[in-house]
Image (cartoon, rainbow, N blue to C red; front, side, top):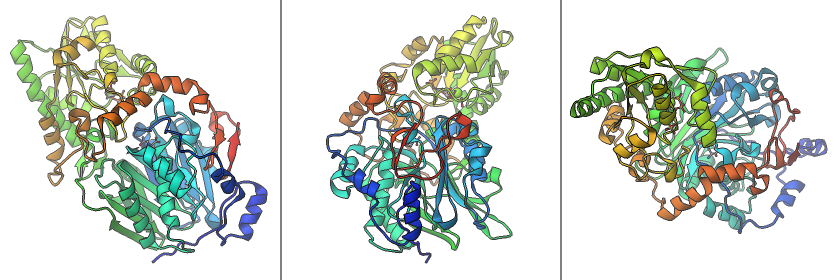
Length: 589
Ligand SMILES: O=P(O)(O)OC[C@H]1O[C@H](OP(=O)(O)OP(=O)(O)O)[C@H](O)[C@@H]1O
Ligand SMILES: NC(=O)CC[C@H](N)C(=O)O
Ligand SMILES: [Mg+2]
């Protein structure tokens, strides 16, 4: 068993730091913690924003603790950038178990530049890329999160909890832990911390950690793939009992010994030279220290139901999730959709001249579809490679503007033709509406749209930003009405059985996928109509925009500003002052 060496509380002020060095082995309540715990009770406070996004998580432990992990974590995060474009961060653990952090709103290349990464000392660390919406753009909600007690924990989360309000109440009334942001990830971290605290031990071991995570899995509901780091001890990953969001692990032999990696997607392992990729199983926790790996199923049995939307849109095609190649599954989606398209076109007597993908994600499927239908495949839309994913941008106005900035229609591929545009999914209809207009503007005769996913009519509550049903173009509309809403001559959707078969054929041991955005059936339970209404009232685009513009609604505008139970270091690349170190204090910019 590896033992955790319990340290005294971290404090940011230099005087506190001197104290810390003197009393490293003493557990005591810091003055600030006492101050924070005396802050007004939170019973009346509701979670202003329930985060429901998709992110990327990463943990790295190098066997040689004298080599810094941050450069590779940063590189790994850039490979997960497609999962979150709004904020990112890294925390490393260096000598004497001290944490070093850099996190801020922005893309990996901007926040985690060379200068910032060079300051992150230590051979293990955790990283995160975040995909919030306008209402959650506060720097304070960038991850990883940190709590100093017990033992010093750093935490990164992908997913969304659906029971945040009662958990917040529990934190306040029972655990007496202060939650300072509207992030469900901060709640999750504090649940974990509180369960570890209950051991009351000076030193804890793997069993204590498994017990704490097993307890957490009975205490909260929702989707969570998490990576944590305990100061001076190791890195930990766990996945919710339904395994809705992905996380896996891999290792790499070096002269010094074995290095270990946790990541949302296998592409990170490939690119960083790690092998033996293995998914963390649903309800499982994995602990990695320099002495080795311990894994345990800590949750009671539940249906394994990975989110099918990872295969449709989120994951990179070159990743393998739960034993399924995303690339192969998208090829299969194209094949299956071809059959449906062929049927509908024949029924309507429409002849298609050319198949055109909507870059980027639909390319793989569109090529297969074209081959199957024996139609020419043409790249009619040229993508500006410097514009990221539009769907995960905050706010409808920004998304709309960016479709036009991102894609340009080449007249020579459209003019006078019946074109079949293939996209992976139609969510709000922003992309389709814009590109159909663009296609018509450059002379397309008829525009038919085929979607690799069925109509999306339900909220996503497990980590994808589709909280409001009324924002979904398919909500309350049949196929003809959807076509009319986006300006298409015809829309053809993949059927749900075909979508499931396209993915499942590569791993038939998976019997269920989370398909809630298509069916409205939520595998965790606990998603009532009342919950959905509340989510919609908090998270609809118009509400989020309002909240984002008003700092008094719980959002600090611009730079780090407010109380935080974690460090906020603004990277030099942002043009802001550097703040270095891990603080249990407030940061005022
Ligand atoms: O109906 P909507 O609300 O517009 O959402 C669906 C579109 O958004 C995504 O593209 P995105 O530009 O985000 O990423 P991509 O480049 O990976 O295709 C997705 O691939 C669809 O094209
Ligand atoms: N995209 C995610 O998975 C986000 C995780 C978490 N709910 C947050 O808001 O930060
Ligand atoms: Mg797209």
